[in-house]
Image 1: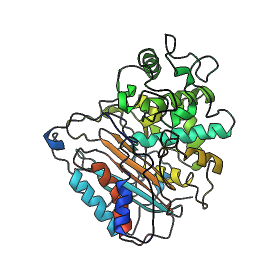
Image 2: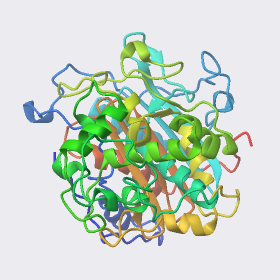
Image 3: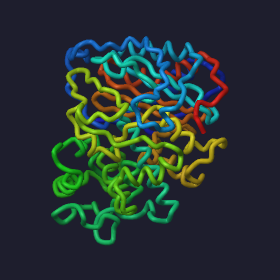
Length: 431
């Protein structure tokens, strides 16, 4: 499935609360090539749900404390918002009803305070389990930002340079992968090009290799790709969103740190900011982890038919909405909480490439706002750091092929924001 990402189109203005401006802004946030972690099935019945109607009425209040059954971490002891923001609740409920979404989790920060945290609907339809704020969701492509931040930490530690070559003699991964002589320009690929999706190949335009050979291990898949899939362009000259490129970055992190990818990200990124229960997801329903929601496919999709574990560095993380909100306030360039990256590193991460000024190192760019969506069968996600001082996170346990689903997901925040609601002044973060 070909995806394109519109570069150079972004211009944000938060002057007053003019709905026309906000709708225009939101229209730019389609993320068409910055979210897909798995190819979609062939749509039938005009995109209608061919697997049966969901129960996503959006009526759940999410008032549970979320203290039971989890891992007993900071996130499990957070308190959901006590005062409803009617404008936001209305938008969530409309979205859930329109697109048959069983559960939604929302986290919003303002001035680096967690001012809204709420769960809606049911996390498991068969059991009628009410969604709570400690529920964990697959992040899909909202996993890439953790990989990017880990690379930036290694850059600050002097253990890597963005100009470092990845494959070949003297490169980070050397000749660990592949059984043949490397094809043209493969030994020219740099860390920077993998981060920016400008490696020259292996992207959505030409069938991302991550969705082939599902029984192969990560190492086997990389070897197979290097042996069988030549580059389409000279590295650095063309933008093509590549999940496989971020899979390679996961191996770069492992090589440099001597840890597994997940262990390294926890050491470099998660533990320092107080996130203790994020993990790489499993593949099957039987692999569902503690406090993880159940995923529901639409239009014939099977959420449990993919090798999620192999997607680790580009789409494998499982987390709560509060996890992502906490992550955002430590990399957002705002002054209240000390960022875990230097200003120089953040600027590097949030700067696009010559091939696409609208995509940085794992982040889509719109002026002084940075964001990403994620999409898998049974999963749709979004996280955004906004130039107006807000950050927001929205996680769901389905994805729909009904018209404008991705746009409507993004609009949940923007439509509520346009109504100028009153937000809490306290901080739902524990620390």
